[in-house]
Image (cartoon, rainbow, N blue to C red; front, side, top):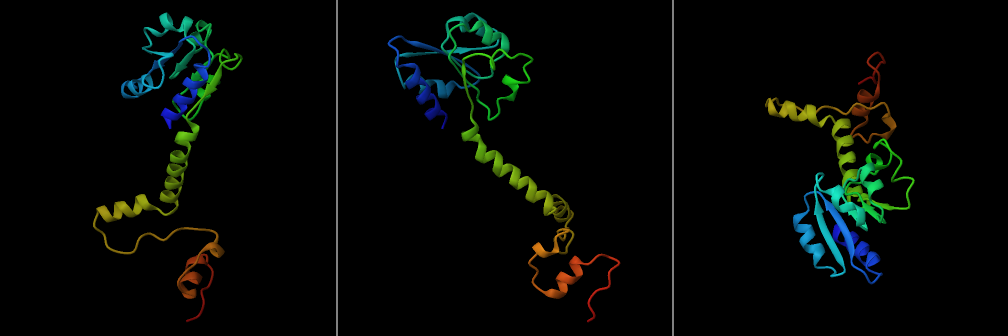
Amino acid sequence: MKRLLLLLAVCALTLGAQTKKILVMGNYDEAIDDWRKVSNKVKLVEVTPDTVMKEIGDADAFIGSIKPEMVMAGKKLKWVQVTSAGVEPVLHMSGSTALRDSDIILTNNQIVQGPEIADHALAMLLSLTREIPRWLALKAERRSGRPPRVISTNCAARRPSSSAWAASACRSPSAPGPSA
């Protein structure tokens, strides 16, 4: 997906006849080699926090985590690609509104990372509601027995295998149970 994003950006930036300069900050050695094969009208320049200010003045685009001083120094910047799903660190938490108030197009990896983040959140929710960490601890101690019962206040949502189990699981400790 990162290739597709870069390919689209390269195509958009290469509409003009001149070579476009894209700065890349981060550890993307293999990706940069692939990106260089896409077009000869793009000059990809790897930068570090120490060298970025020397190169950003005439750069057309930037890939990586950009800081407000870089935005202000990038007089020709038209596009910034943030390699994370969220853009809050560069827009709101940077202490500056330089990027937000500019005409620079800001893109991120939300589409690329969104499904994975959603899957992880759902897995964590299921882990906590099903008490999986507790069950794994019991398993590690080699205790036998059933996995812990899921605690729920919504008894109507359960689908128990027997009505006697449902009555015992859903009643409060002080409520009388069904007679046997």
